[in-house]
Length: 77
Image 1 (cartoon, rainbow, N blue to C red):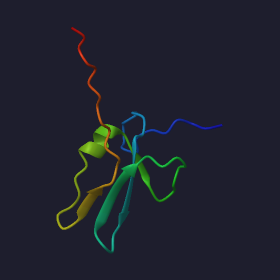
Image 2 (tube, rainbow, N blue to C red):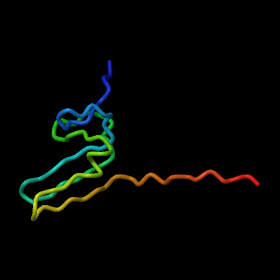
Image 3 (cartoon, rainbow, N blue to C red):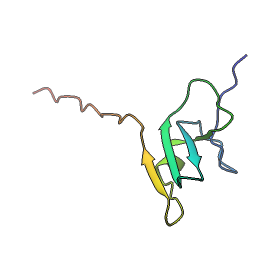
Image 4 (cartoon, rainbow, N blue to C red):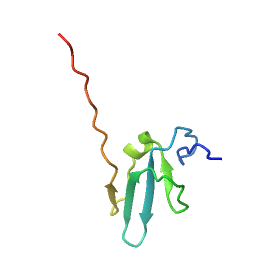
């Protein structure tokens, strides 16, 4: 039975929307689309926390999520 995945940030119960991974040696942080399977070495984040994520000075953040293109409905005359 699959359980809904939620943001890993304390006190946040929003649904997970992104996966965060990092590597200390290269001082790199990656934010990807949410993995289909729960990955033990990744942290699930909601869209708000993923968008506001900041990394320590000297680290690099790479947001590799696929952008969501908003389609504006046409206005009928």
